[in-house]
Figure 1 (spheres, rainbow, N blue to C red):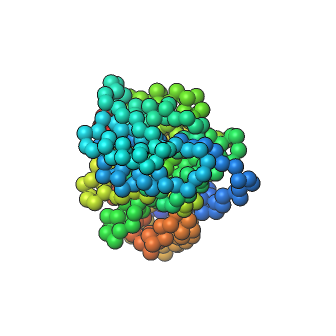
Figure 2 (tube, one colour):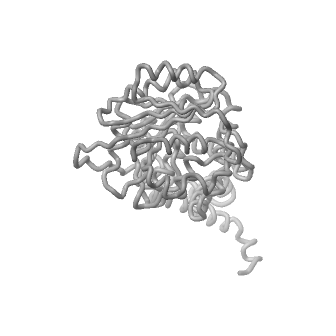
Figure 3 (cartoon, rainbow, N blue to C red):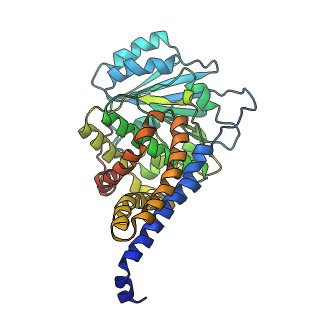
Length: 378
């Protein structure tokens, strides 16, 4: 290739590069994300229900347990089920609160951990203890700071085990809605993440789940020897395990709004930045195919607006806006449908602002992929 020729036509090369980046973005929306927009859960062929074990890990979560655990304990689920709370070396009043709740709810089981696990940082040891203590095959996970969106959370999540092949069910866990800009940004990032992991699962390439609302069978946990393959990494009790165990045959999703769990978002920018940086430290351990697909999408998303501006400025603004318009229309259709399905439709009027914000989001959080995870999960 003649370098001088490229330099002579650098404006055209810039526009072609922008067109390619836009094409990658459009491909992801049409091939991956449209799957979630078009998804319809299969009608239940029977009313069969399964025994379920709910597992919650808590460390110094007395206030959250008081607010949220009753929502798990009063679920309208007539089939046998248990709720196991692993109280992991708490120094607050969690023990006494749980003892009082046990008097009213016989399905509540409490495991008191009084010693730290050596060489197993993070949440994996208490979670593993909880799972191994369960009586039933279907495990349903959530966190102490989450509350089911309805009294039919257990019923809906377990109904996704529609056949013997299903071993993993990925749920959605949004945040409570508030009027602040920070709240909307947190909810947008949560939606954008869910758009990816739920769509990839529908495409037969599941790569992660969120421990605030996640279910899998006990058999798949033991078949993969629990968290042993990544026990030295503090995070990843949800996404790294699913990245290892999930495949196109054994994984399904549940986006029934009655199956959501709701969480309180953090209140300050600093808390959110620390939270997201901690979460992103596990991405570098994903399978190579997942790293490639996620990295290609993120890079194309990151480059889109800078290339749009430079192409319009140096080449031809009309052509640049045409490409932007095509992507915008496809985005709008996919977002409008999926935001409604995930009960986040109030974010739609601001989606273009949020889409531009993602450029800065990647700048802020990309370095977290290179950081060493902190050893504590609380």
